[in-house]
Every structure is written in C-alpha cells, then in structure tokens.
Image (cartoon, rainbow, N blue to C red; front, side, top):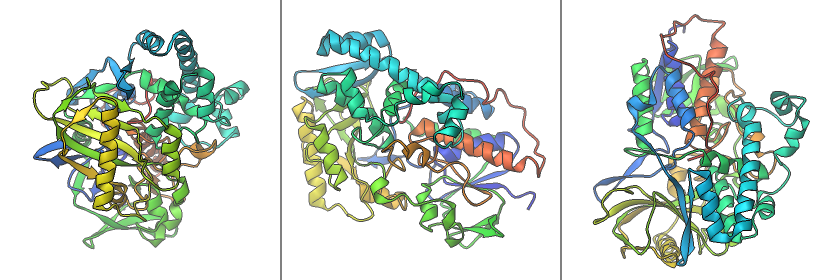
Length: 516
C-alpha cells in the first residue's frame, strides 16, 4: 500500500490543482476522468465545426492562480497568454444606451455618475468601500482557509478582539435591502445584485455579505488566449510534468473502504486500484446519493432540491451581429428582476430573462460570423424535467427578444447548440443541473458547504461545490485545500521527497475575485 498513488476522481479545475500541487511534492498521483478531456465544467463544444467555450468565461483572481502555478513549480506566463481587460462588463437595459464598469475605479465612478447622477456615483463609492471591507475581513480566514463554523470558530480566525468585524460582514441582512441603501436607481440594484449569480444564487435571498463579489471582480478581469479551456490544459501540463498520471475514459463506479477508511476504487471496467487517499472532484451530493457506492454514502450530504444553486440555459452560437457594440462580457437586463427569480423558485425558466453574452471573438475583425456563449439563469430541475423541443424554441425566442429590446440583432434563425438543466444533470450526477453546488441563501449557507475532509478518513473533496465556493478561482482554492489536507494526513506515516520548486502558497497574494 506504501507505493499506491493518491487517486483523484475528476479532472476539473479542483482536481487538476490538487494533482499539480501534490505531485510537485513528490507524491504519486493518478487522475481518473470519465470524459475524454480535462476541465470538468470548463469545456468546449463543437458548433458548426468550431469549438465554442461551454463553461465559465470570466477569469478573475489571477494572483491566486499565479500562486498555485508557482507552488507547483511553474510560472503562469509560461503556460497562458493573459490580457487584463480595461472594461469589466457592458450592461444594457434598453436601446437608450449602456453602462460600462472598468478596471479603473474612477472611470467606473464617472460612468455611473453620467448614467444615473451624482448621488448614484456617491452611492457607488460607499458601496465599493463596504464591499472591500467585507472582503478584507473574510479573505484569509474564510476564502483561503479551511472550512469553518459560525460564529466562534470564524471569530477565532478573524481575531477575538475584532468583534465588530462579525457585524460588519452583515450576514443577517438581505443583499437586496442593502443595495437599496446604496442605490436609489433600480437598474444599479440589478447590476450589483447580479453578482450573486456568480455563485448560483438569488440576490433576493442572499446575505449582504456577498457584496464582496463585486469588489473581487473590480480587482481585475483577464482574457485568456484560447479561452478558459487553456487554463485546464495548462494545469494538466504542469501536473504531468510533476509526475501525475492521467487516465481518460476511466469512470469510477465505487470507492472502497475497510474498517472505516478508504482502501481503493473500482472502475467501470472492473479494474481495482488500491489507495489510501481519494480526492473526489465531483459535487459532494454524488457521494451522498450513493453514486460512488454504498460504502461512502455517509461521507457527504445530498443537497436538497430547494437548496440547489441555479442551473442555466446555455446557447453556443455562431452569428453575424448588428445594432449593438459588444464588449467581451455583456449583460442585457430584464425589466422585472424579481419576476425572474420568482419564476426560477417555482421551477420555470423566466419568460422575460436577463441574458449574459460572452463575445468570444471580441477584438477580432467583425466582418463575419462570431462565436458567442449566451446564458439565462434556470432552475436546477434537470433530474425531474426534460426540456422539449418546443420549450427550447420558446426559451430561445425569449432570449433573443431580450437582446433585441436592447438593440442587439443576431441572425434568424440563430445557428446554435443549446445546453439545458437536463443536460447538466446528466453530466454532473445528483445535482439536477445545479452548476454551483449549494445556493448561498441565508446566513448559514456558506458554512454548510462540504469541506476538504469528509466523514470517511482518506476521502477528500475538491471542486466548485465544496468550500470555499463556486467559480474557477474558488475551485482552484478548493484543490489547494484538498492537497494540504492529504499532505497533512500523510506526513506522519510516510516520507515524501519534495521536488525542488520555486515559491509556495504561504505568501499573501493581492487577492481579487470570486467566480467565473
């Protein structure tokens, strides 16, 4: 058993990060991935002969990613071509104009002032200050630390003398209510409330604590040449260089235990691999639902349907465009935000939805068809509801109507592929298509996420559905935390021979964002 590798189930961002960091320290690692390529939710699909990003598109928290590459003995710039975006996102409500937010804070203040008046600009300054304060309080103890409980363990990490800090993060107040304190203009309430969808949640049900996400994005958004898929490929390359073995098309049927701890995994092929450590880079609900065998069902809890995060209708399209000057990230808001989330809460796709559009070819010549990813929030009911052709057509029509209302014209009929909650449910079992794990609804939600360690010794979790939360940067941080848990649990029983690597994860980074 001494020479068996740590087995990582799933080559999503969390699993890839865990593999790169463990193998950098001389530990043998094997990654088993049921799909043919790395990335998990970070993937590309073919549309009319062209690969189109079908997963996360917003790349933030670059310092965290840089620190992970450094700890794995690599340099980000050697593997990725990154460009910092001047414009964070473009926002539109109708045909009368749009509002851009910028990497330069003062430009955003000026833009908001011109859009909604001097009171709105002042409100934005106050909002930004409060969001930064919340982020600074929770950065080290919550976002980058292991799972913690409320309130005393968190208070211990923050510092027992900082009693006021617990009040300052406003866990018992609604985000929507607090946005009303900063912004009288309902359009700005919509804009800054939308950040909660980055973790798959409704701004009407999340605590005001989550205004920190706006601060995180304000610290920088980067474009990756080749899309987010390039990040997954880069992490795989680094992990391979450190000695990780990857096996694709290798589905794990069962995680085995003996005397209460992990002893191995059984593949769909019948092959058995012995190990004392398994990192599950899947939604923890898959463990609790018995999808990795009865022996590990007790390892994690199943997220109840009413507690699931949002799913999505995702269009991957190629089209010529006219009528609206697109940026890379664009949001086309509905005129009734509350009605959108009311519809989702009762299990329906909104008929008048807000649509996010990523112009994947932004900056390239615009004389031909361009690639787009378009997202509309939807309920995570894919395990109970199969979307019919008629429903898909109606959702497409509703989405295009929203774009048209803001002045954007795409080709009709639109050449596209549509991914629904039903499709996501098949890809990510036991989720119903929820893309972010558990929704961040209520003050306790952030403390109920699965941590790195499970109830079964030797079985660990990583990924966007685990602590510290959803999105590419947070999934990477979960992988870091999982690697630290594995190392910590092995350090007293076996000697490893760390490789000579540069840097480490102990240096504080100038943190940035939340979600992708």
